[in-house]
Image (cartoon, rainbow, N blue to C red; front, side):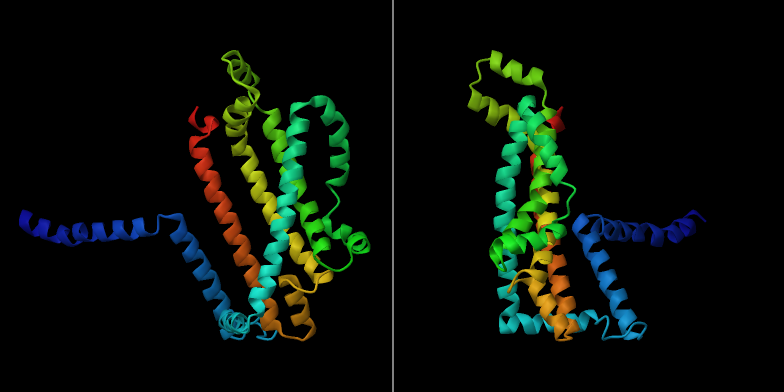
Length: 277
């Protein structure tokens, strides 16, 4: 009887390692992200395949993939993508320089903050879209207008993150470093930067996402190249496949940018003092 009972349990026991293998395969974040994206595109394809939505208004993922392939083959995708990435890079870099500098100064010297922060808080609620008319008057149609709008969208998150990080520093830790003979530049590199990065990096990630959205908005109106321009021109020519292909490209590039910065953020947080304490 016991042998029969053990024999009845054998299939279950042999299946447990298989279930564990499957569970471990789906335990990683990349695998879960891949499954989520696959399910999203599968549902999208099914909706269009069953004619639940007009294919002209919402092309299927297969039609969009074909449109992306054609745009990649004729080179127009790379031209527009390169133009958008260049504008984001320049505007984001300028925003980092200005935002980090102002955030550091205002966070360190309260007197300076009392003069500067009211101006920043008055400008910060104005959406970048509201700046487009005056931006075109100042810079015309071209790269300079896009640089400025990306800068406007990204500089405020960088400033807020930097200011918050500096204001939240442990003054006792800095005083202890000075008592131990640390030079000003050592205080900056060994205390201030490691303690601030866990707060600044999420702000940079948010700023990059805002800047990416701003460049597309600028290209819809004030540019002759870029993914936003590609979307606008395709809309005017009723090339809906290319419109959605441009939107998908924007989403994938933005996802990749955020993933890269998030990975850097996790690496920094692994050795940051606030995480070890």
